[in-house]
Image 1 (cartoon, rainbow, N blue to C red):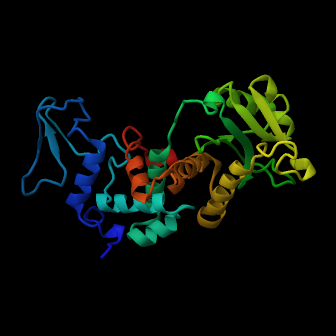
Image 2 (image 1 turned 90 degrees about the vertical axis):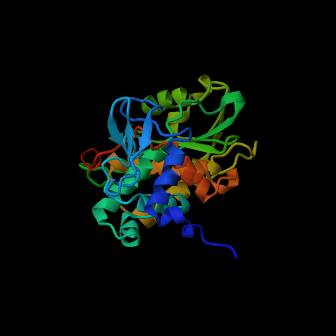
Image 3 (image 1 turned 120 degrees about the horizontal axis):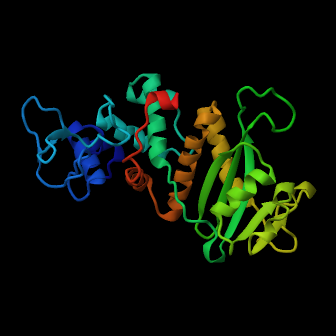
Length: 307
């Protein structure tokens, strides 16, 4: 009989949770976060010793797997952290802090902070440009929410601006918050994140008018004329990145509902992470959980820096 994934011991037993996380963070065995030593490290097994405690006999300091990671200084049981990571990885459009608060039995403030720590681990920070080897890169922007201290008005000037790049051949997105959608703001970002040999696909917005000077090819679809796939060449469209935007906006509006501009980059990291590691790329829910642990080290957040 097939068992539910959430019946796994590491979701319910604290020692099993620590063992699971240690195997991900320290695949070659314990590493002292204080001095970097891999030798002369012993696990403390006293009756009153807290779970997962080690001591390094090089620098003579105690530590757990939480030190130097997104879990540092957290009093939340590690099994709850694993549950939260799994829920965030398995929910296509995200899971709200209120839902985590009710499901895990932690306070709303704690659930909100846990979510942001996990999103920080999801942030990929890749520097390799899109469009290598002549790949096709779709470029588009969208608008969401409202920037603080900017009065409501017609159009999008009062909204938060998001730029997304999507490499069709890689099936990957890279999204970022921008202050404006002018050519002077966007073109330097595109030149930094897209290889010169790339084929660029955009709509007919004015800020993209001269991209043919910077890249191998620039295809334009005329949204202003209600054209969504070029009649001359069916490969010229931005439908793939707009499909990504539809998932992002449904999650932000339907699940998260409110987001300040200062936090938007982490939500974009979350949606990029799930899109880039989706089932179409043979990554399942547990596979995404494993990928999160590749980013937990060195990305500690404090509540003061996120609030």
